[in-house]
Image (cartoon, rainbow, N blue to C red; front, side):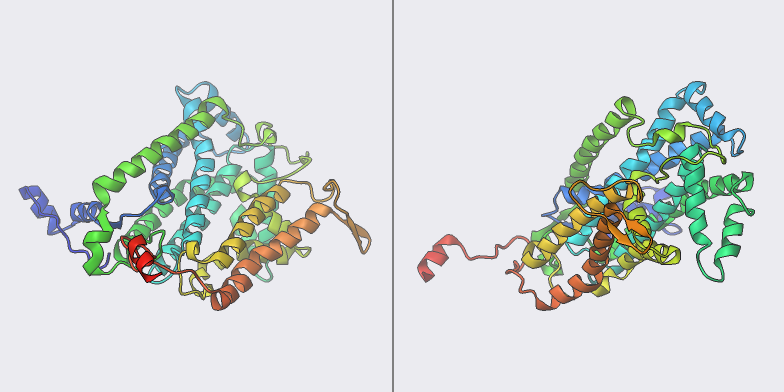
Amino acid sequence: MSDHESTYVPKTGVEKWLDTRLPIIRFGADYMSLPTPRNLTYWWTFGGILALCLVIQIATGIVLAMHYVPNVDLAFASVERIMRDVNGGWLIRSVHANGASMFFIAVYLHMLRGLYYGSYKAPREMIWILGCVIFFLMIATAFLGYVLPWGQMSFWGAEVITNLIGAIPLIGEPVLIWLRGGPAIDNATLNRFFSLHYLLPFVIAGVVVLHLWALHVAGQNNPVGILIPKDRQAKDTLPFHPYFTVKDGFAIILFLILFALFVFFMPNALGHADNYIPANALQTPAHIVPEWYMLPFYAILRAIPDKFGGVVAMFGAIGVLFILPWLDTSKVRSMRYRPTMKIFFLIFLVVGVLLGWCGGKLPDAEVIPGMPSFTVGDGQLNSFLWLARLLTAYYFAFFLIIMPLVGLKETPLSIPLSISEPVLPPASDAGQKG
């Protein structure tokens, strides 16, 4: 909370000296004692899980960088050497590779929770915007890391995605050459991608600090979605530690069990088989796809017939999240009390899953059983592509049309006056009034 007074008292001379020059211990102590809404559910534990994922990715990435060789002739072999000859290398690489997927599972759930409970609304706009910055940096970092093993999918994925930059008018071609380090993907490209992939996690860590700082100022949202005045903090809040650190700790243990299941029993389940084939610029894979967590945006890209339009739509799908606090016109935060918007939100979840499904399908060789294909001009519009276009239309309509209009027209349910007080009067009072 912005009005939360510090309760930290330095006990030793070293703490007093440090506190007057760099009060980092005070910041941590104040965060542990931050008044936190007592009704937070396990949906609020993904922040701690994401922090753990970031630490794991940075730690394992540093070790992998010690053995990886960013050279087109040696990169694939160096990854195999890590897996076979480096002590514990198989474990470190498996943790790092699957950690990216775990990272995105947690961040998607974290963002959907914020969307459902209106965590982007005033005074928490900056928390949401910084979270969107982190999400964008995660996507960039994941793409760069996907290229480093230098398998078939790494090379051709880089070829497809970087070519999209060239579709931007005026500046596209110069930026493309700068990004690749030359006219084609080669050794200079791999070196640049390796450097950026190593750098960006530390940039993410810096933005996370700003994210936590903004959270410290504005305070936590809650499932009810109401602001907690200072005179009710004693009833409606609890210190973050030990109550919520224990809760987060239990959720982290469950998450690590899921993580370990993939690392030890299904280490390659979330990857693509073609990426275990060395990159070959003369042999194009049958189907070029990104990692699973980018498939919805890939489907949006392919749904637009114009190349530049597809690039705009793909980046627009992320960019629209940045202006979300100003698109929602409802005065009620939580969709728990917005029955109409809740229905549209559930449809949005289904649309996101179906976009990922469409993104993993061939756009010109398969049809959905029972669904027609359409002839447009001289070519056939595949039913997967047709479905992806409908889903893309709903994705943007949800933010740009549905959310503003429903916020103006919807009649929300009754909202509690506070976290600790019910919406309805006690049963005895209700009986007397009846």
